[in-house]
Amino acid sequence: MKNLKLLIITITFLFTTEKSFSQMMPPEPIKSPLLESMMGTWVSDPYQMMGANMTDEVVHTMILNGQFMEIDVSSKADNGFTYLGKILIAPNTDGSLSGTAYDIFGKKGITNYTGIPDGNKVTMSGSNDMMSETREIIINGNTMTHNVTFDFKGMPQEKVTILYKKKN
Image (cartoon, rainbow, N blue to C red; front, top):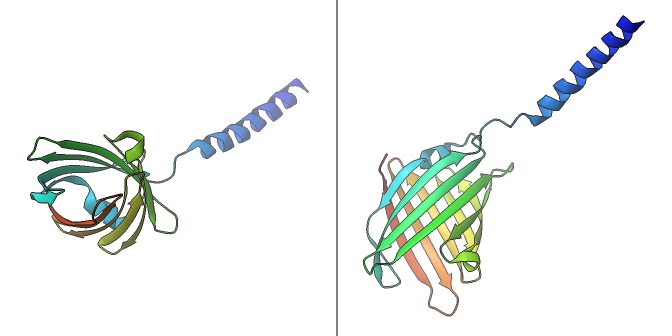
């Protein structure tokens, strides 16, 4: 009788632990040709932004078991200003993208994005307390083009085209 109870307890334990561990397994990494084409370090050609010449370096990596794309942004202006930001993008089950950007402007600069991929292009829209933006991103091999429209509150609309080249 003792052996039968021990056997039942052991079998019950094995079944419940298998289910417990299977629920804790992370999902497979996201598979997206568009996101994969964006991975790496990109450096922009100089461009005009709010009266200054800017140059960007952006680093795209997949993080947390390939579930999110992290983008680190560093922009330097010829007037000495440096902009820093971090963006986290998550692919959604319907194929769209959503994410949040954090930058040196603190809570006022937190931007929530949504995006619609289409082949080698994605159109992202975002807004925060200071502005709204629409960003069309086109990947063509080792070049990436951002066509951006900024609507800063209390300022004229600004349209910028930024051309990036893949560094690695």
